[in-house]
Each structure stands twice: as C-alpha cells, then as structure tokens.
Image (cartoon, rainbow, N blue to C red; front, side, top):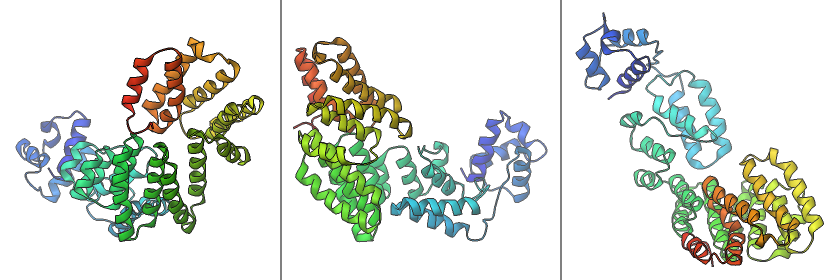
Length: 380
C-alpha cells in the first residue's frame, strides 16, 4: 500500500462510500482497488480526480525548507532538549501547515504525536508506510520499548525504555538500560539525555532505598543540570533526596528540607505533614495539610488521588487508634490500589509501610506476604 492509496481508502471508508460510487466516471473499480492496495501507481489525472471527489487536498510538493525543518525537529526530539524541540516544532507547524496529506505525512504525524502532553500512537494502518526509524518511533508511542530499541538502538530510545522500566518498578532492568543510554549519549554528545539517564538511575536507587548509589547518580545529574541551566531539575533532585530520607526513616533530615523550603508543591506539603506526624508535631502537620489542599488545583496531576493521600494523613492525626478502624483500612487500600493503577509505581511504594502496618496490626499475614511478593525489587 502507498500513501495516496491509503488516504483514498481511509477517506472512502470514513464517508461509507463504495468503490463503485467513488470511481464512477473516473476509472474502473478493479483499477481503484489496485490503487488502494498499492499495487499500481495511477496517473496524476486520476489521483487528482479521486482526491477532488473525496475533498482531499493533496500537497505533492513540499514547501521550501520543509524537509530540512523536519530533520531539525526530529534531531531536537531525539537530543532530549525539550525546549529546542518545542521551538523547532513551532517552526515546522508554520512550514508544514496542511501537509498531513502529503509525502511527509508520516513524519509530521509522528512529530505531532510526540509534541502532545499525552502522546498516542498513530493508526496501525500507517505502519506499512513507515521506514525502520519511523516504525521505532511508533513502537515507542505504543509503549513497546524493547522492540523500539531493537529497531533503532539510539540513546533516546534506550532512555525511553529505561524510563518505562522505572515507572513499572522494574528497577534492576531500568538501571541496566539507563546505563547504556548514558554511555551512548556521552559517546554521541547528547548532554540532555545524559542528564535524564543519571536522574532516572538516581530515582531507581532511591526507590530501592540505596541512598549511597542514589547520591552518586544525583551528584552527576546535578552537575549536568547546572551546566545546562536546568535549575528546575536541581530542585527536583533535592526534593527526591529529602523524600527518600523520609522513606528511609531519616525524618529529621527530611523535615529540615521540607520545613525550610519556600513554595512547596501539594506533595511537598504532604511530605512535610508526614514528617510532622512522625516527629509529634500535629499542629504543624495540620497546617501543612491545609496548605497542600490549597495547592492541589495548581498541580498538573491526579487531584482526586492527591486528596486521598492527604486524607489518610489527616485521618491518622485525628484518630490515634486508626489501626483498629476499618474505615481507615478501606481508605488506605483503595488509595494504594489507585496509586498502583494510575501513577508511577513509586507513589504506591511510598505508601507500602502503612499498608504493611495495617495488614500486620489486623493479622492479615497472607495479604502482607502477597504484597511483598509483588514488589520483589522495592523492599529491603
């Protein structure tokens, strides 16, 4: 199948037209069938007539500089420099307006997909038109990362694969592929990919509660971030270190960070409230929870889950005998389940100590063992 044939077939089916109805007065039905199957290349006159009847505006020639701009946009994407990609994509949108019905359609649709906040794969029918590199990008959009790396083992693909393993809680596998991503990015000169690879390696170690290795990776990531003027990344690294200290029982160290930090996010205030809960500072904990509630509308993630997490802390503060309260258990297990389903696994892992505490206090040892079996890489 070729691009023109695919476009004709898709638009004909979308309109629920028969082949006979479309090609009447233009060509034979058998000829149209061969066009749609990509078995023949029709004349420009027949294509123009079919496109005209379907209302398709076909751009057979690109605008000056379009092909080079597509290459620059793709290079920016694969460099890991998000700001540069956005700039190049804006320029491509200007040059490539109305070119989704053109020989550049696949490239433009792929770049459009990666520019969205929540990328989605292209129609599988387009895969027959893709070259190996385009297909690798499609496999990434489909979250088939191992296949994507096999098709195109570049640093960006390796990083995407490592990020996926990290988000699934497969930290050992993630570390292996992220190390490859970092090494190849260093060899090929992609500092933004080096930064992201080290950050995710640090995240993996943090979630495995390996503080020394976490700090090793975060130290390298911080140097790269400062060199690249990515101050937001530096702030995230500092936050992650404090959150890991909290998870590992270093509550005083975590409290020093969260209590002195200006302009905390909703989850930052959530961590501060937990620090205060553990340190016996209930009034300060309630103040932090109230501040977190006010910040939720500004945080670009699941607001309902944020409220659930805050409600758990508040419930524990208000009910010292929460381990004997079935309402608390229901709230906790529902929140834990939704965190596993909707967010990277690290969020659920953070709440595992309270789930284990609930199971043990209520002698639900089978559930506790099953939970440990499901998180083999995450619990000491």
